Amino acid sequence: MAQHTLTVRSLPEETYNNLKEVAKNHGRSMEAQARLILQDATKRLLRWQQDAVLADLAGPATLADVETPFVRSRDVPRPIDLS
Image (tube, rainbow, N blue to C red; front, side, top):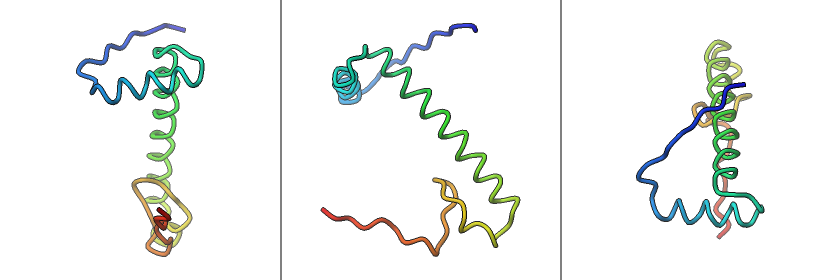
């Protein structure tokens, strides 16, 4: 499998520091932690997009069964802020 390199420029200081802290807490390098975050995020986004397309194809009757950032049923209550 080919290995690719990605350079991220202009990363906000807060994001950099948060990544550093998360990596430290998990005993990983910042690079390894960033790699895991990107792998997880891209898999989730692809799954959400696929779910949204399937919901679109299925029509309004089944939209309530799909929970994605792109499609949300009006019948599903919003989370309650407990703070």
